Image 1 (tube, one colour):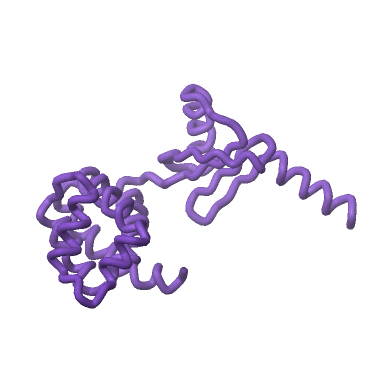
Image 2 (cartoon, rainbow, N blue to C red; image 1 turned 45 degrees about the vertical axis):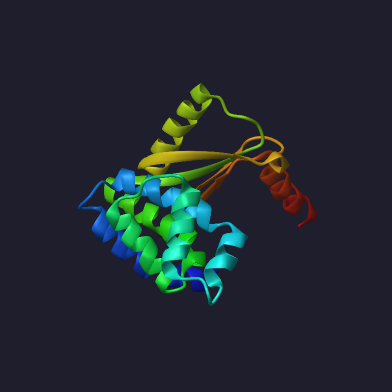
Length: 177
């Protein structure tokens, strides 16, 4: 995984430098669509085939994304395909979002919850987390029933785990020590 992250970093930085003179939000949405398409194993196999031409792969990817792309995004996609880096595209987009969020003073918060969170609960939780982490957060909720109850929040390299599962693990360690 570290290798893909290492490959993705220069692409993401260059992409961000170009996108910040354009519309970061629009480019982010277009890049998300490309990243979603690039996760398909069959598409990557087609792109890696020695007889597949760059323009064919670009045409297939843009058709699969079902979206119009800015010329800069199309040029970026063409460069990715020419260099055989389609597999790294989701990581490039993830790193691009980190850079874009840092520039706007927002961090991504991945919230893992055992149960569905209503909009009102999410707003309250987000306000508490913003106070706790000291910055604006863009919250993404993912269900994880194995937590039993509570939430686990990941913001960058910081983790706040208030789940029942984590409490039980801490109790187990305390009792067996």
